Image 1 (tube, helix red, strand yellow):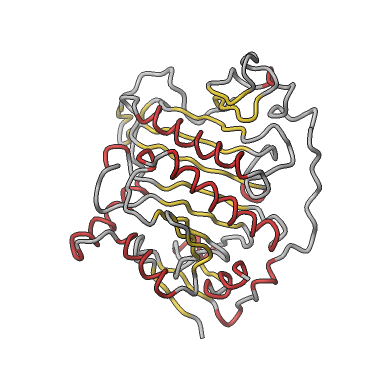
Image 2: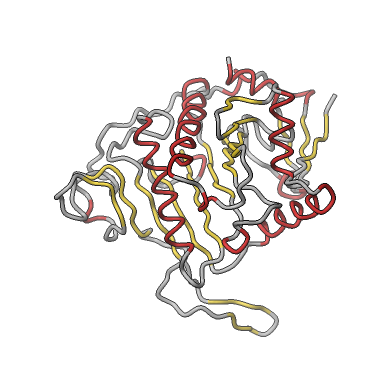
Length: 333
């Protein structure tokens, strides 16, 4: 029998279509992915092609080597085709009935490795730790800018997830506003806090740890689980166990602890589902709300194993053809 489940944190409804549910192993792709080379001479993110990208903003590289030259292991650059740019004046104007503003902000690319064929799921732990440290450093630096209100860090892995370059990379967009989607999450979290005097995410973590059947991994600082109302098969949340609204508040040790969990979960997806396409988003409070008691930062991983269609687009309600209790068991075995 189908179920309609609700996510307590977001208030979103999801249909778990048990009548047409697939077994977790059925989500393996029928076609094998193309094997990528370690180096691609046409890829602008590969070493030796630094001249094909904008000048680097920051990098981890061998001591004594020049900027925008090889011998790096992580580079941060402005996006060559940015959604937003910092060289414009911020200000909202009216155009008859409508409002608009110039495209102020930051759009950066974090090139995670010089090796073209790696991903966070099969890199060394040290490399993933340094990726997470870069996330932290860039977040802290950009959050100090006067007009930046929200910072989104995300990763599109695979063509089905919207990436245009297969070389391992993440992106960061810093906005001069708080998007409506994030405002909605804050409002729901505030409503729960007003009713219960607790953070909904903290209570969710407590419930998942007690129920156990959707938990993939627990460490001293983090828990990874498949949400009760997962939107898509194998949706995964990685949530800090100690309350923290803003990602920029994490310590160096916590960033390294996050890297361990992230590498482990993405490694399981890589090996058990043959490297599926996925979107990864770091959800965090707007900068001005980063110390609040009602919100909680977390990472959301959405594998692209199914395609949203007309019903999802028209209703905002996702149909999930896999039980999260079963997908969690499959990835934990």
